[in-house]
Image 1: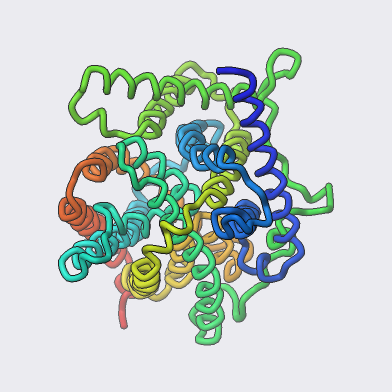
Image 2: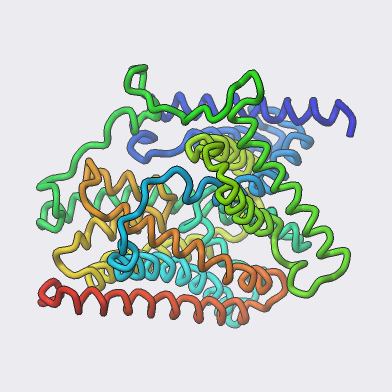
Length: 475
């Protein structure tokens, strides 16, 4: 690799950085962006897209070279590997000891939280593949590709980061429509984020008028520092994390970044070995999943070697967050608009149906499973935010009706999300193998199986809760 290639990469990243700052400025100054909590990467990415050649062609206001667009399109697929690899790092480290029997005590709520959230995401996949099966049968002129519809769950329940990574996964499988699929997923992520916030705020206002919110009589206002995206008062600014090393030896950020990149490199090496020796089942697993599994091993080893003092989860999160910012803005700005617009009709139909079914899995189902007293609305609005956006959206919607997080909602949801992550270690290889080579019907069948399994998990948790407190479930 010549120095010219690296210089070109830096120029590409520098170009994106300018629009990240523009997005940050607009988030702070434009009320609609503040109210929707749109990330700077999404705002900047769409400005770059709308003013660039992907939309305006030869009349583009921003003259972006084909080299830049190619680099931006490839960037999310590269960055998604260390982003996913970072997830287990720091897990179970430097945390206060759990109350004895706490897991068993909270098991019913964990099962319901995990089951409902995961069944919601699974049903979004089910909708996508089901739509494609029907369309292939009655409207073959739509020319939907085999995995069309999978993007609904990746955008709604995964968010822009997951949507950006989808292209890398499909490209790794040699599917020539990977860039179109990434654009479709990014479109769903944007629809989900914007629509989810608008509808979520509407649901909160409606619930407060009906007396369904347990903590507030009327909705609170999101603090300005959260809305605008920064706090100008230095004394109130959050601390980034602990300095676990002395900089004269090695920087703390270098340690965390080095572990993330080292594991990512090893993941590429293992996938290369699997492909070289044609190991059955292992060649179709995406490289980021190898990185995820390897990091679980590294994290376990660090704890056993009593090196947990070396890791700070806040520092790790800031590094992976920075990578996500660049991955998202690169994915949006390089979106193949013409290819995505060819599926505008199916996208619109699925987006609407996705909101309707997500509403059902959140509000009626949370009332059914948690009863009338155990914060059913607050739990539902948290799940709604995450199932139509990302975790921060769910937390912000929850904060509107539970300003100080006094309810157990956030903790229970987090434990349920952790259980889902553990289960996905075993289910994801099957799902991605089917995504790589399986028919649309096979993918639909797998989604049916997992969705039903998660729904049963939620109902088991409900039965345990009802047994412990029958009065909570009386009409």
